[in-house]
Length: 222
Image 1 (cartoon, rainbow, N blue to C red):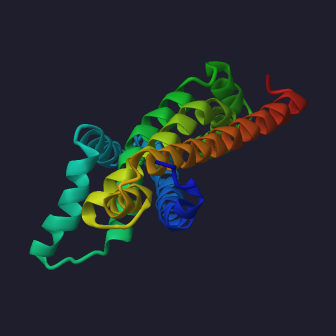
Image 2 (tube, rainbow, N blue to C red; image 1 turned 30 degrees about the vertical axis):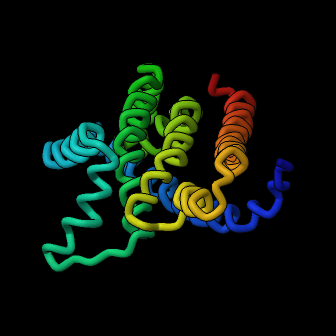
Image 3 (cartoon, one colour; image 1 turned 180 degrees about the vertical axis):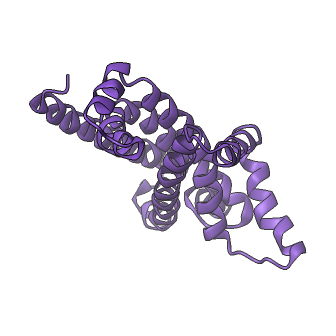
C-alpha cells in the first residue's frame, strides 16, 4: 500500500504549534519575572519577603505540574474563579518554571566573587545599588545556560495543557491521529516541531550568552 505524503498533515499541526508557541512565550515571560522576584526575594534582608519567596519555590518545585494544572483549571471554579485554558496554561507553566529559575537566580547572584561586594561597599554603593549595578549584571551570564534548560523544559511541559482541552500541538496530533490513523507520519512531524523549537531557544540563549560575555570582557569585569 502506498504511503500518503505527509505534507497535508502540516497545516493542522501548524495551527497546534501556534498555540504551543503562545503557551511557551507567555510562560517564559512569566517564569523569568517570577524567577528574578523569588530568587532575589530569597536574598532579601526582610524575613517576610524571604519566607514568601521560599514558600512559593518549595510549593511549585515540590508538586507535579500536572496536578498544579488540574488544580487551577478544575478546583478554582469551585471557589467561583473561572479561568480559560490558555491563561491557566501560561500561569502554571510560568509558576512551575519560575520556581526552578528562582534557585538559578539566587545561586548565580551568590556565586559572584565576594570582592565585588567589598568593592561596592568601599565605593559607597547602597545595598540596592550593589545588587542591581554590580551583582545582577555579572550573575546574568552564568544564569543563561541553566535558564535555557528550564525554558526548553517549559516548552515540553506545554503538552500537559492538552489535558485541559486546549488544542496545542500534542492535542492536535492526537485528534489528527484518531481521524487519519497515520500515527508514524503525524508524530514524526510533531517530534521535529518540538525539536526545532527547542533548538531555537537553545541557540537564542547561546547567542545572548556570547553577546553578554563579550560585553563583560570589553568592560574589564573578568
